[in-house]
Image (cartoon, rainbow, N blue to C red; front, side, top):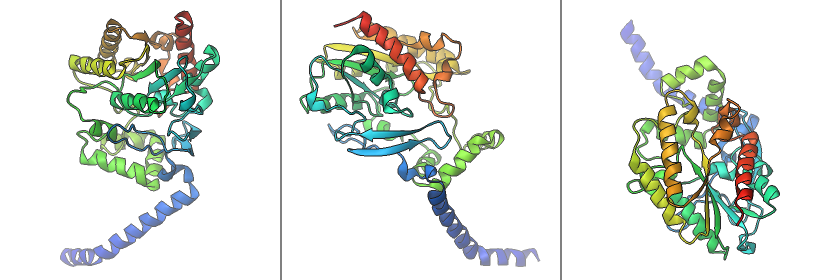
Amino acid sequence: MIRNAMKRLIANLPLTLFVLAVSLVLAEFAVRILLPAYDPSGLVRFVTGDGDQPTLGPKATVVRHVDPSGDFDVEMRFNGYGLRDARDLARADADDWFLVGDSYSMGHGVEATERFGELLVQRLGRDIFNVAIPGDFNNYGRLIHYARGFNAPVEKVIFGICMENDLYRYSQATTESRASGTQGASLTVRTKQALKAHSALYVYATTMLRRSPWLHELTVDAGLAGTPHDGLVAGDFDQQVIDDSLKRLEEISVGIERRVILIVPSRGLWLDGYRELADRYHRAFVDGARRRGFEVVDPRAALEAGGEPLRYHFAHDPHWTADGHRLVARVLGDYLLEHPD
């Protein structure tokens, strides 16, 4: 009897797989049509740089940037240069500032007018050209070169340095692996990245799992889902990470008159299991940058002043909320007004 049941199961396997495949395809289309917020085709797709060309946003494009978990729903408008900025690089002059950095400086999750760079414009009364795009120091260097290619006099720069992912051994890692986020990635990680980029059904399912604490915990334990803390540095302190990062930052800032670093503190400073290591990297980088002649603005104390520094980050997404940008704009603005040109 068991043998007959196995035979029937094997005989019906092709049909079962076909029905399952059709069901998944139909479910995928249903989610895209009925729940468009989960459609990955609406996500911001950056154009990866090649050679001297930096990674940029989609040129002359307006998209909705929606977080399926409900953290944000904002408009992202990219100009003809592929930058999230309304200013024309060709009209920049020597008195203008340039903001170079990653997604924090670009304003991930907030409206353009809520970004700390735009708030600084209002306070300082000067133009600040936002040339920030997700990437690392290598891409920051290309962005500076890119802006200069349009005759922009990049002489005053604010570098938004993210302590969570900007620092690494630049002398060993390849730019391509850092840009793609696949350096050493397992098959499971690469599969999840592909599904997140192409499947609305996957985005919807994982979002629902995040909203159910016990189911989310189950899938995290099984390695099928991540947490908001994924990507935080763990392990032992590595001085070469600091040395390589500072060396690369010096290389890309050659010829810049004022070099102001805005520290984007790691959330690890305030999370169990990460505090000691995050604090060591934080202090080592800040001290090293100052020794090398960079001006450093560190909003850590201001973020911690109210006793709830993580409230300036979204609940599920790691980036700053509009409140976080306002606080950082105040700290950075105070410094620049106290230290004029």
